[in-house]
Length: 198
Image (cartoon, rainbow, N blue to C red; front, side):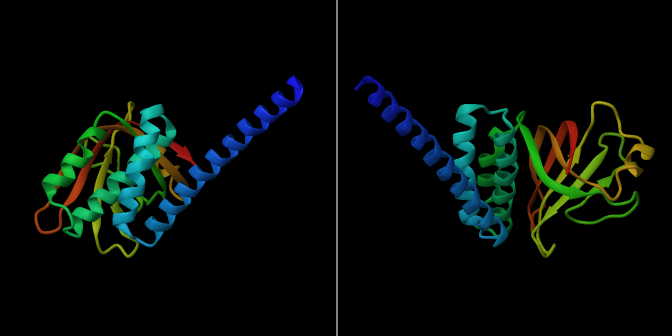
C-alpha cells in the first residue's frame, strides 16, 4: 500500500510538472503569435503577465531579461499608436531600469550603413559602441533607439569581424526615456553589453 501511494504521489507530481510546463509553453506561444501579428494590446497584456511571474522567481534571470525586452517594445507600440500617453508609457517601464534586457537576434550592418532592426556601429559617439533601431515589421513605426555600451569599447576591427553574423544583445538598462512628440518612442541606454551568437 505504501509503495502504491508513493507511485501515485510521484505520478501526480510529474503530471503537475508537465502541465505547468505545457501552460508556460502555451503562454509563450500565444505571446509570440501576438507579437508576430502586431497585436500590441494582447502582446502587452501577455508579456506583462509573463514578466511578473518571471520576476517573482528571479528578476535577473534570462527569462526575465527576454520578456522585459518584449514588454518594453509592446509598451512603446501602444504609445506610438496613441493608445497610452507618454506619461503612462514611462510609468509602465520605469521599473525596468537597472535590470537586465535581452533582445531577439539581430544581424550586424557594415560600418557606416544605417538600417532598422539591425545592429549598427556608432563610431562617431564615444559613449556607445552599438545601436539598434527597433521598429514594426514594415519599418513604418519606430519603437525604440537602443544604445549599447560595452565594459571595454568595441574596436572597428572587432566590429568588422561581426558583420554577416547574428547575435542576441544582452545588457543592463541604465536609463529609459521617451523621445519625440508627434511619433514618440523610447530611448534605451544599456551598459555591460554582451553578445550571444546564434
